[in-house]
Image 1 (cartoon, helix red, strand yellow):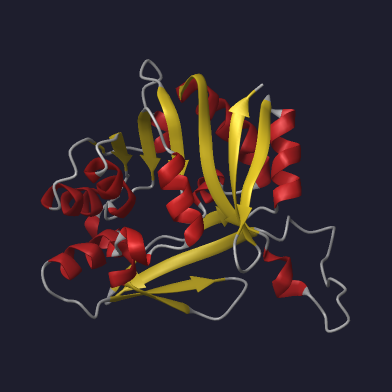
Image 2: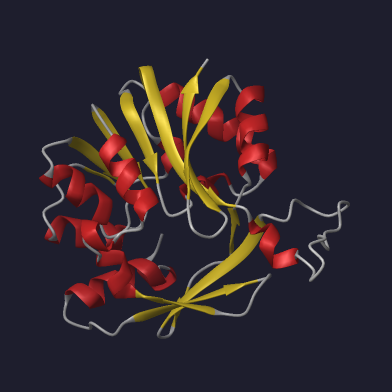
Length: 238
């Protein structure tokens, strides 16, 4: 990813350089523009949501932190004397992690990671399963996860059910079943004059994730529900 098309990595780099009020604008095809304060990407363990704390606590063995960003989760695991590898495609974000002393950084696309190295825990937080982009890609996604997992390893992932965005006052859902799954969202990020490319990101409800997991040889265990339609789950190979 080129720096000029990397708003997230560029914003993290500026924040680390002292621009503490940096913000990322997130555009989507579903809701109004959202704003991410970059300081949120540098939060401490005590500032994290409970689901993230649970996932980090449950992570054991050789850990792969997918979509590591500024290294928030990887740093906590590293400081907890756990063996963690931070996977991130953004060169600028990887530069930030190096400056923050993250030790093991894998700068590449998740789907190109070498499969001769196996992981006991694959960690995908902040709706990390979004990397699948759409339900049609879940077969490819699960195949890659399976190829990277050590025997008895697990995937820890959180996501959200976006049905609340389509609920009517009477509790019914205004969803067109002839269209794509309602959790397949189109995003674009902007930071200052840096505009990223449009990309698709998947939010998936727990029942549908359990179905696709079973179709692709995984068992899913829900660990906990969050405060707003979000959840954390553990997936293991059958």
